[in-house]
Structure formats: C-alpha cells, structure tokens
Amino acid sequence: MVATVNADTPLALHDKQLRDRALLRGWLYVVLLVLFALVVVGGATRLTDSGLSITEWKPIHGVVPPLSEAEWHEEFDKYRQIPQYQQINKGMSLEEFKTIFWWEWAHRILARGVGFVFALPLLFFWVTGRVERGLSPKLVGILALGGLQGAVGWWMVSSGLVERTDVSQYRLATHLTIAVLIFAATMVVARGLAPHSEPAADRDTQRIAGLIVFFSLFQIFLGGLVAGLNAGLSYNTWPLMDGAMVPGGLLVIDPIWHNFFENPKTVQFIHRIGAYVLFALALWHMIAVRRRQPGTTHGRRALVLFHLVLVQAAIGVATLLMQVPLHWALLHQGFALVVLGFAAAHWRGTKGAYPLPTEIAVTR
Image (tube, rainbow, N blue to C red; front, top):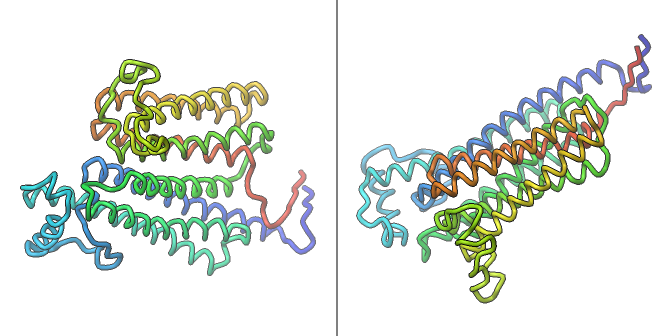
C-alpha cells in the first residue's frame, strides 16, 4: 500500500475527521427527528384550532403546565378573553379547554426541546474541536433560524388574540416555511457530511435537483396558506375544481394580488397547480438522470424521489376528497417533509460530500 499524505497532515488526523463527521451526522439525524415531530404536532395544533389556547409567551416559565385546578382556571380565564372563545367556543368546558391547551403546550415544549437538542451538542462539538471551519457558518445559521422561528411563532399567535378568531394565514405560512427551511438545511448539512460512493453529478442534474427542493418548499408554503384559510374544506373534488379544470372566481378580490393570499379558491387552485408542476419536474428529472447516468446512485435516488412525490400527490388528493380528516391531513403534512427531506438530501448528493480539511489519497 502506498499512501500519499499532505506534508503537515498525518493519516491519523484524516481518520479523526471522518469519525467526527460520523458523530455530527448522527446528531443532526436526531435533530431531524425532533424537527419532524415538531412540525407534525404544529399541524395538529392548527387543525384542532388549539394554537390560541395559550395567550402568553413565557419562554422559561411556560415550560411548566398548570399543576392545580386553580392554575387551570387561571389559564382558561385568559383564553375566555380572546375573540376565538367569545365568537366560536363560547360555553366550552374546562375539560374541552384542556384538550386544546395540551396540543399547544406540546408544540411549544417540542420547540424549546429542539433548541436544546441543537444548541447544547453544537457547543460541545465546538469546544472539543469537532466542528470544521467551513461547517461553522452553516450550523450557526441554522441555530439563528431557530431563534428567529421562536419569535415568528409568537408573532403568529399574537395575530389571533385581539381582533381575529384565528391566526393570520400570512404569519402561519411564514412560520411553517421557516420550520421546513430549517429541516431542509439540517438535512443538507447532514448529507454533506456523509461519504459519497460516486462522483458528483453533471450540472444539469444538480440544477433540476435543486429546483425540486425549491418547489417542494414552495408547495409547503402554499399548504400553509391553505391551512390558514381553511381552503381545503371546500371544493372537495378532483381533478375538476368547482366543476372545471380552471374554475371561475379566482380574481374577484381587489386588488388582484390579494386573491393569491386571501381568496380560498385561488389559494387552493394554486396549490393544485404547484403539485402538478412538482410532479412533472420529478418525472422529468427521473427520466433524464436515468438516461444520462444509468445504474448510478443519482439515478436510483431520482427514481425514489419521483415515487415519493407520486405517493404525496395521492395522499393530497385523498385528503381533499375526504374533506380533510385530521389523520389524513397530518399524513399529508408529514409526508411533505419526507419528500422535502429526501429532495434536499438528493440535491446535496448530486454535488458530492463537503471536502475534508485534509486531502489524502490512498493508493493500493
């Protein structure tokens, strides 16, 4: 065996860097699991109209739920002051309030938990010298997005405490989009730290793979608008919508651009069109990659990605036709994360692993 090593880089350092990468990658996969649970519980919180049950933002004290009957009544009294209770849930019992409270509390405790699961290990890895220089900005950027997300979450909740009976769809979609952006960024970094068995794909393959990630994110943003407007509860037919492929009444609000954010029919229609575009992109990508690079990992992953998009489309149609039952809606949201996560990992895979700080070539 002949080993060629940079003059100031021993082979042992190279092996240590590989071990450190494996450790970081395992940690990031744990973070991804917690993020997945956080987004799904957030979806359940929205679908059960539980998001306004806690009317204050207490980052520290709010970790502890009510522990006595008096504390439960205190929380319930605060909820009874907001429009959602007064206009929609008037007469709700304390036991019914507890149900929606626990959904929101679980969402908030998971949000705090993912902060600790990310920040504390990151500090440990940093102090012990396991974080490569080029990796630091990526991880700090994800941490900063997480901090921003906490503030956006309260900004969203506050929109439903004074005049509205629910939260603003603009803020809900923003909150969801930042959450899945954090998820995708974490997946990209984890995949970049993994060994790659094949060279990077050609530039066209990389571009289309990146475009699929973008459209997956955009579809989830549109899904946030759909949820915020309860747009999935109407026009529950497919492939026709309101009796036509392109229904009327899409641009009835003035100014016109408001229709794309405030008209439930328009928002649902655009979400459908976005799904068709994503499906077509995934199909085109699969065919093109398997023709250009047959038998490669890139081709196999493009095939898997297309089938994931196909399954997600089927789940979406079924959810719509059944008028958005809770479990199907959560399945649709959860599987959207699966599609996005795999798309992000596939895109990073087409680019190859992050280069190691050391350059070692081993020839046998």
